[in-house]
Length: 270
Image 1 (cartoon, rainbow, N blue to C red):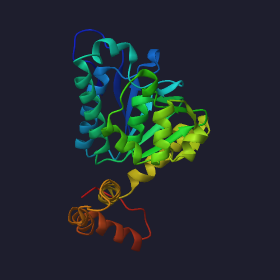
Image 2 (spheres, rainbow, N blue to C red):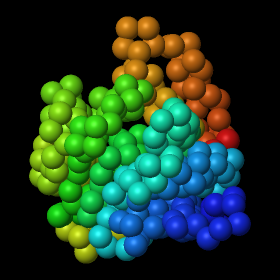
Image 3 (cartoon, rainbow, N blue to C red):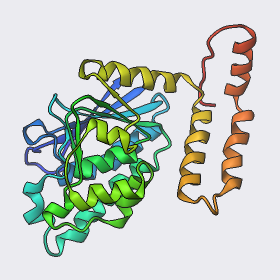
Image 4 (cartoon, helix red, strand yellow):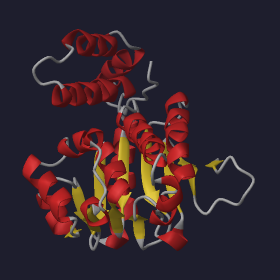
């Protein structure tokens, strides 16, 4: 399954998908340009997230970059003269914003598997994921100030969900590259592992999530996101309804039976 450009010309890069059990991989596939996102790739991202949402067999979505050099260098700067100049700026920003918004709102747990460079808009993609697991040697930056780009405040919000205001300011003010230790210290990363262990570590985490009750995971995801976004006026009625749905589900009955029978539960998401 793959998402490519809707035009007739060959796409310089693409997002493609791979399924591995209950895990849907979304691969950022543009290795000749350090997996930079083209406009077509930004356009494709919401469609792929929605497709994963609609597929009951998918329990976890994982992003990775093609090859060993980069998760992604961010937006493809070679397109900026045509796609991010003058009247085109707002249109390009809307492409980015839809991609980030749909990813952040996904009902499926999401993981960014980061190897190598994770820059600009790609760091925002990672920030919109629920978890971020990186290989040693990875590097992180948002170089907007070095390019004269005003960073959209809508994109600062997901960033502030994972790092402090002071760390976000340092990322945006300096535009410098942070190594994996600095990124972990600022809260950007959940874990850092040796490069040769990266895929295995991500799959272990994804498998652990996929084995659990989907409604329980969804209730936790929505509660955390809502309480972070609206600490003063969270919609507790909606969150309580998600918790109630867990107790009314077939999976809750299965979990109880499995515990009593001393076996592993088989959850269906119902």
